[in-house]
Amino acid sequence: MSNRIAPKLLAEFIGTFAFVFIGAGAAAVVGDGVGLPGVVAIAFAHGLTIMVFAFAYGSVSGAHMNPAVTVGVLAAGAMRPGEAAGYIVSQFIGGIAGALLLSTVLGGAGTGLGTPALAHNLALGATTLTITPAQGFMIEAVLAFFLVTVVLSTAVAGRAGSLAPLAIGMTLTLNIIMGGALTGAAFNPARALGPMVVTGNFTDVWLYMAAPIVGAIVAAVLHTGLARLIREQVTTISPASTPAE
Image (tube, rainbow, N blue to C red):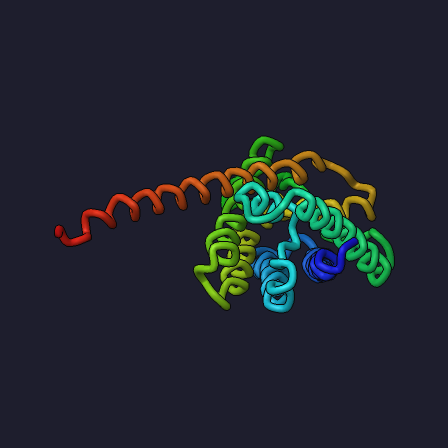
């Protein structure tokens, strides 16, 4: 392992480890049946963790802490495939390690360790809602699309400057407020797989692995397409704005 990549992989491991330990830990401690205040608490636990570690490690690795984000950055042409593979491995290891420590401090896997799950008979007003795998896939993909779009448009494109971690953390928070009760709102394969491995509960694992990747790739394609259109527009306008000789 080169001296250049080692700090990046360590940063991704630590960041993902913290994200799962705190985020999934909040979900495990708060549990079900607490309504919107509980969802908001879980959302802020995830969002604030991403924000502070993005401030801490953004200059080291970009602070992806999510294989879907790494795939999105790769698809946008902002990193090399070998580096992306190393990031993803470090993120998955960090997620599993975070869930293992969480299991230790909570006395086992009885709480579920914040493992994401599709809603069944969720009370919404006068009706109940059950999320099908197809609906869950769509929700997880769309939430990942939002997150990766913000990452590419702020941290990668450099448009938000030092405020990029705040934008990313708030996007993650808002995503979970909307989707937390519906799918668990992981939209992060490492966040989902860590608790699944430790609890042995792999229900809908394919959905939580694949949907965020699909959303990330769509975000990258649209991001690069939009950037190309903007460049073409600037190129078209510039000659017209030049005074004639």
